[in-house]
Image (tube, rainbow, N blue to C red):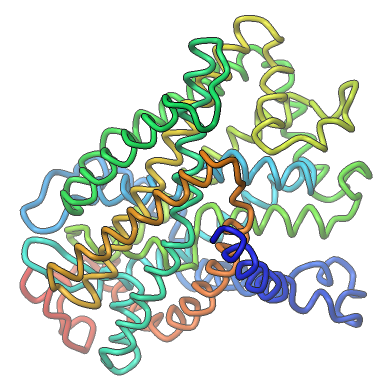
Length: 504
């Protein structure tokens, strides 16, 4: 079965590589300076962010402090969940293993300058996140004491209200989640084994009894979370997300404090290498630019529509409130968490040390840990850092897993509220999770499925971006009303029926 899945994934990976790379494989385009190394998908994503940023007059800057106040003033709601709970739920999925592995891959391929382009893509991505999240709030629906919405909901309403459109987009996201869930289970189990090995100083075999125990424990906790519904998952992420953020931020800041003299050099090399990459990283500006932008966009997911689901389930006072909050989520993901990873990779200077060739041959997590060792030395301090990083990596993977599971259920409710159908979706998700972990225990790798998720990502982008442009006029009306502060937002403001907002 594994071989069959791998062969199927290879077909889709070739298609994903073509879509992500088009038209860089066309000779006349590839010969263009710099721009010839940028795929059309990246140009469209960044261009969309630039357009929304200018059109909304830099909303991500002007209302940043306002969004923080909304978060701090959040409280539990009888209908839906609070804006803060929605923010933490989306952060659970947005801040995942990619914040370590993805940034490491971008820097090791494009050099330190890739981080600069990551920042740039995130800045404009904040405006894209504002638009898609505001749109998801405008068109959310009510189901009992919960809200549902996001890409399937606003897609259906923007394209004439045809039920099949919403069903198709909902199923598309469920498939997307199914492609990504195995890798998160794989990573979570790997982290649990690594932490145990670090604490006991013993090597644990992949198929040993303790690993099967971890498997059963993780399956039990996940099943308990999923079958408790969205509110239970939100309560869990309310606890885990702040914990993982504080632990990871604290660990990296301690390492930075111990190497404070390198901080000015860090900013110097990031900016200069963004325009003049070192030969060891390929020496081409386009490589650094492409790697940084792609990683930034895939990490914060602005424009994919995947994070429109948690934006919709919030009980916000105004659609734009949640849009601003989701923009802050992009800032947290890339400007804070990804930058912290960049601090370690770049200030560690592992590629400049003796044996730098070996560094380029390491796996991504190994490269990150090697950079930690350069910053701390090989003593007890490094051992503690490796343990903390392993714990953070495991929490990142688990909260990301909960995000996929919860958003999959939100989309399932767009298809049908039938309890049997919802239970079936939950069981299928858990089965796919079990497959990912058993693959780990069996000693296989999941590179084929990770590659398949690249295809899923670009499909989501292709479905979502046109809808953002179609619905942008509604977002502009909502934003004008938000800035005017005149009365409540309802159908009269939008010029079309939005029943949920008429009842608020």
